[in-house]
Length: 326
Image (cartoon, rainbow, N blue to C red; front, side):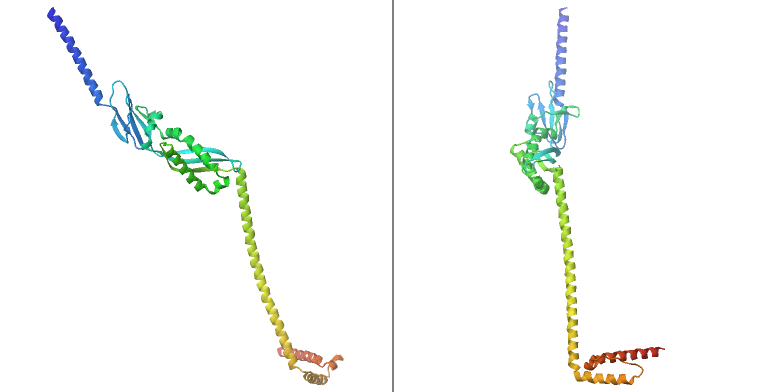
């Protein structure tokens, strides 16, 4: 009986040893096979252990989490891709005493080298139901570090301008906004960077729009009046040129007439006129079929008879032409 008792005790001891070996083997297996996880492109990650978050930054890759028996080791990801932001702002413009509504839109990024504090200060959320992977999105980072700073800085910059300057200097203002916000992120050592940034969808006050439309209408009216003025001036200049040419023609004709009269007066003397008058009287005496009544001036001014003679000559010429046609 004593031997059987000792044999039983030895069997129990062997079972304990066997169970302990199985446990050790299972533990070793678990320790050698941690959870397989991925750090996708445009992300960085850090491993969270029971003792805290490791300092090592994981770049896009696939690896296994360190195995653990009592706790669940995790991977925390931070999104570092370029992302778009938009802020809707309504601002009272001090110079104009009017409200200006506009958007600011931009493309930002998260610098991996400045992401260390993100893991410690922003709560990560489980990613795609994976109990071992948590994610901090770019929008989460912007909400914490950028949103209020951007809105405040934009208001400060925009309040320095008038609405008219906003209309005329939009490109210059966009450059200023992008530079000053980027410089502010750097000064505060925030893990955000600016790729592009500027104004969008500006809604000007109706009174400003109406004033601009009226100004444009006046500008068009003035341009039209100036154009009409130029046309009228050109027409007047053309008319003046024509009048000058006509005046020159009239003067030339008058001068010609004077020259003709002078030549005639020089060529026709009183004796010549008297001689011609006597010849006319002879012709008239030969014509017994007609009776001529001459004024007394014809005998005092024989040149009158030249007109009578010319008339007679013209009548004879016309009669001869008529007979020839018959």
